[in-house]
Length: 252
Image (tube, rainbow, N blue to C red; front, side):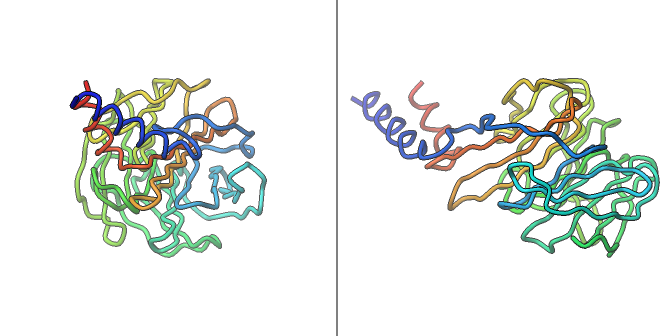
């Protein structure tokens, strides 16, 4: 009787959640990245930003289907690599430098507003969480050589927390999605338990993810790969994944 009741709960929850993509997030589509792209940034529901480091470095603003809206240059020292967008927070674009260890904040028009030294390691990739009930909100830096993800205060740069990457050389973490230099896996930070969400067609450069939570329970993520393509993942859940996970655990 209990088993049947729990089964009904799971079926009902899943049926409501299938109005769009299922849970967990799955691959929806792919499209070519702009030339020289090395990282992607996304928060909320748009736009999608792509970073191409160089002299000068260039930022592309795209629609979520891959069409270019505009592009502009930013001045950042040699060694720029990581990139993220804080969306609803203070609407800044962030760039990390893997050589000098600094993290820079720019307006969405390309003007430098602040910078600080990463307190741990050399930041390779960046991410920003507006709502992350597991790891906390704020700016995340992936330190590849230390295989460490650090959460920072975006105003002062002070260390708030840290945790190890899923494999050996983490290069990007943003709102639960994570990539590693030495693996084709797209990892899923499922309540402090790393899981493989998908196998990518090429080694990744970076990841950018937006979450609407807990009201809409949508996740949309973009993964930039070394084959020059960006892959879009989406997922929707009618109930919070933690609750659904507990129901599934009970059912087993």
